[in-house]
Image (cartoon, rainbow, N blue to C red; front, side):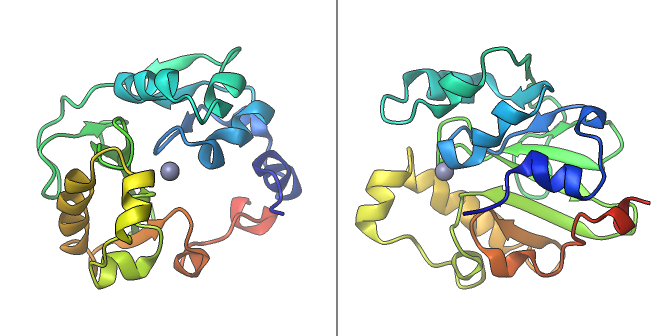
Length: 191
Ligand SMILES: [Zn+2]
């Protein structure tokens, strides 16, 4: 059992109220349950709100999102790193979101350019493990049928992400090994 996000923040002596928002890669239950503990807006695409609204087998987002302001955004900032459109959140390239609507119909990839020069691509569940990116391994057929809204789109976006490996640290949400190079949240790091 993992430690809830809000407890990790508090443990690191980061005041959760300082957060300006939660930027989701997608609305599946295992990516959104922590929203309930954080009183901040949620950044999400219209397409993903529609996906979550119609997800009959996954009602967690519907349960945790009321009471939160949903801030939607659109991809008006032109092509980015091989993706046809993007949303440059701060207008300075530090956080750039691109659509990757295969896993769910409103899934996104979040590119982060940290101030120390490190570059990350948070790909959500586009691939479940780094192997899927490095070796361009598809999910087993049955899992793909069950998990992805549009397997062909997943394959196309995975090819785009594979081309970035080396320049970006690619972080699938469920592969703890990929977290190794990310500076961990600690009171020290935040000082
Ligand atoms: Zn997912």
